[in-house]
Length: 379
Image 1 (cartoon, rainbow, N blue to C red):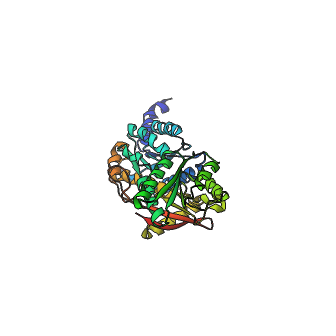
Image 2 (image 1 turned 180 degrees about the vertical axis):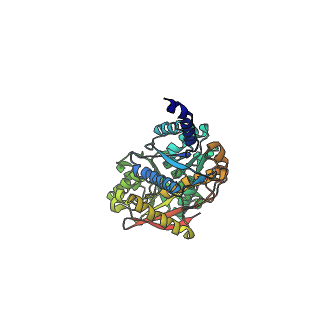
Image 3 (image 1 turned 90 degrees about the horizontal axis):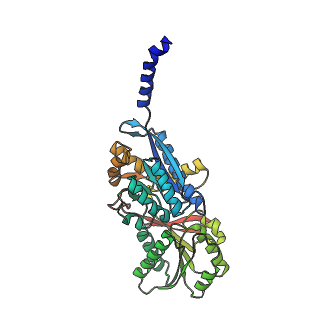
């Protein structure tokens, strides 16, 4: 008893010393649709985040001279706005240091208010709606070009390069699909005032039967159909276009521009499809991207679907801001995130005053032999 009493203060002191020297844990939230029709894209994003976290820990990343441990806190929003706000609040309650996500515009925008109110920085790696940064939330950033650039550029490309004169537009009524379709139509009209928008049709993100709207469009003989929505809808739509004998070219934004599209569309996706990824890697950056793609394939035994490299860069950009600020405290590193410069896999990342990426690029693709094939990078 005497032994225990005598040495208890020393034991307590040692315990406190160990606690005081404990490694700081930095929690990074990630949100994407891990269930539902876009689960393959959500998992791709989550894999990109995991890869960045693993790399940061492997290199013993330091903040204010001390090695910290990064932990990923993943959540599934199922591409549903209601679920998106619920998991956003869950991450706030978990006191994460920052959030990467969401994937879809329809979940990113409502969730961004929750992060803003809590003062937690958010970087979306794939949300393209202009509304996201128009809210003037100083916590909201993105690492890809927005729909004003994406849709407008596709519209100009449709009439200028593909020679489209009669265009039909379909969207899935989501924030993303409707927004990119509207910007596409504006871009086409601006590039060629005489272009005809011969039809505007609507579907939804869970639809599988498009015969009615495609039959209506077929009667108007368009030479190009633009679809604003995701590959899970765009693929079956292409199949039904072929079955109905519609020979019009097909164009879409980043939502359809995935490695999975040929599987979803069968042999209906080829050089007749032109799509754009809201990001772009120039020739001088290509080796970095190629190396990333090889590492990703080796780590997960699957190919990158779409935005994993941008998610990876978003995590690394957030970590860089923390290092610059010498703190992972959201209030302290947020001003440094606003002025960060990070040379990533996808290029130089820095933000304008609204939180949009500066000099946002986009890459045009088509499909050959079942593979997504790069056409050109446009800024």
